[in-house]
Image 1 (cartoon, helix red, strand yellow):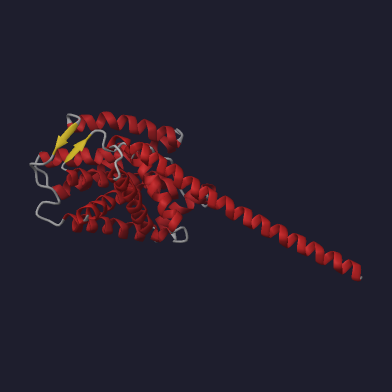
Image 2: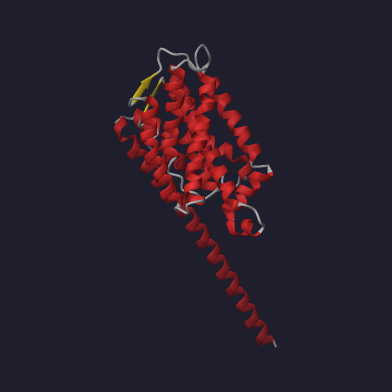
Length: 304
C-alpha cells in the first residue's frame, strides 16, 4: 500500500510540471495548444537520446526544455505571424513533431535501463519533489513580474493591451515557448523515471492537463493566479489517484484514455452545473429584490 501511494505521488509530481505548462496556454493565454502531446514526447526523446550518447542526465533535461520552447515558438509564429488559428497551428506542430520525435530517437522506443539518470542512487520521491517545487516557485514568481501581469492581461483582454502600444504577438510567442518548455521538461523527467522513451508516451497529455486544471480549479477557484501552481499540483494528484484507483479495481490499462475522457466530462459537467445553479440563485435573488422594491413603491403610492 505504501508503494502504491508513493508511486501516485511520484507520478503526480512529474505530470504536474506539464500541467503548469498547459495552464499557461489554456487558462491564462486562452490558447488551445494541442501540440502539448508532441512537446511532451519531444522532451522525453531528446533527454533519452542525449543520455544514451553520454550527456549528463540533468543537462539533458535543460536541452529538452530548449527543444520544447522551440516547438512553442513555432506554434506561436504560425499563429501570430501567419495568422493561422490557434487550434490549427498547434495541430500542425503536433503532427510535425511526431516525425521529428521518430527522427530524434531513431526508432519508436528507447530503453534507458542500462544508463544513469537523475534518479540513480537518489531518493526518487525527493528528486521529483525538488524539481516540481522549483518549477512551482518559478511559476509563482513569474506571474508576479510585469511580464507575467501583461500575459494575464492579454488572456483577459488582448485589445486593451494592444491599445497601450504593447506588442502582444511577441508576448504570446514567449508564453507558448515557456508553456512547451515546462511540458517538455515533464516528458524528459518521465522518460528517466520510467526508464524508457516511447513515441506514443505523450498521447493524452492535453486531456490529462485539462482534467487536472479543472479538478484543481473547482476546488481552489478562489486562489489567485500567482498561487495557481498549488492547485496544478493538487489537481494532478487527484487526477492520477483516480486513474490509479481505476486500474486497481480491475480496469484494463488500454482503457486509460477512455477513463481520462470520462473524468474530464464528469468534472466539466459538475463545474458547469455549479455555475448554472449559482446563476439561477443570483437571478432568483434579483427577481425577489425587484418584486420587493415594486411592492414598496405600490405601498408608497397608496399612502400618498
